[in-house]
Image (tube, rainbow, N blue to C red):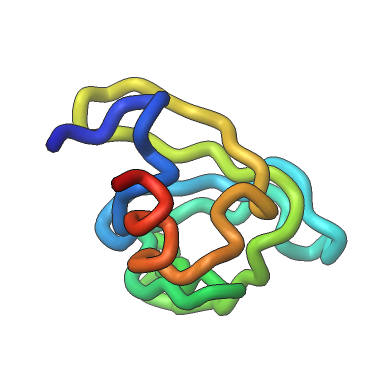
Length: 90
């Protein structure tokens, strides 16, 4: 199944480009990179320098889908383990 703005909630986010648009930690705003790991409450984002930051799933994130489309989602809407989000879809 392809990533679309409608079904992104049900996909593993590892491998997608992401930008932190809003976050309670002001120092994380604007962080961009590749999602290299995901857990229930966190995304691990690797920036272009190869540095990895653990970012809590709070605020708003902009994901770049493989199709080139961008989608903005709330961290609270993905604040589950990837497999838990998939179960909800079935």
